[in-house]
Picture 1 (tube, helix red, strand yellow):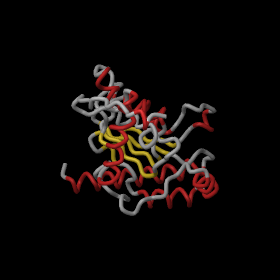
Picture 2 (cartoon, one colour):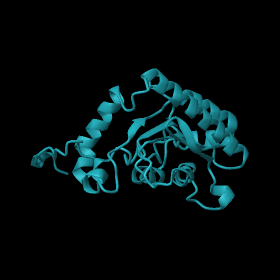
Picture 3 (cartoon, helix red, strand yellow):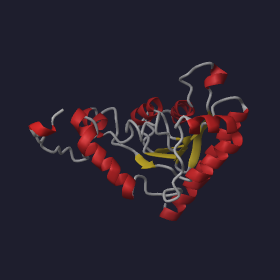
Picture 4 (cartoon, rainbow, N blue to C red):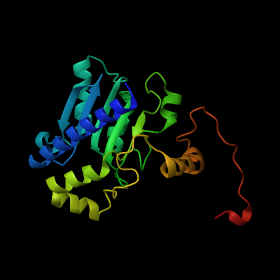
Length: 226
């Protein structure tokens, strides 16, 4: 599949996700949804089901993963892409990594709860380096895809929830430069993540380079110690 075809598929599936998220809001749920695609065909799509099932684990991504595994008859979704209108939380991202999903696409970044932008579970190489039998390498990540469109859909379908989440900092303001991008972390965002990995994540055994190389530790001078 060419790049143009891939982008067209990503746009179509993400807009399907927006429609499901609006449906979720009308059902009294959080305005979240997820779609899982295998070979350009939807194998699972779902709204959030926390209120309906009275179960806090029934996030849209987790429900979709469960449905996709049953539909494909396998716990491994290594040929699949998951689309979510909101950045998956830490719990959902861990399930995404363990189910070995190959590509993750989301519209709205969640700086407080996001499993990519805050905890970097989706980009953590330590999981796959330590347990390659269980975890695949980090998935391809297409972040803030159609972000402005997703934010507008969220605001229309759940204005009160949108205002509350925006006021609490749960939603990031869509970036015009990155809206609709198809390169995942790139440019300034890629540089920021690289600096974070080298100076913060790796210090605590998280992240690490894809080649498994680690930089030697440099002792801080006494004047710089706290």
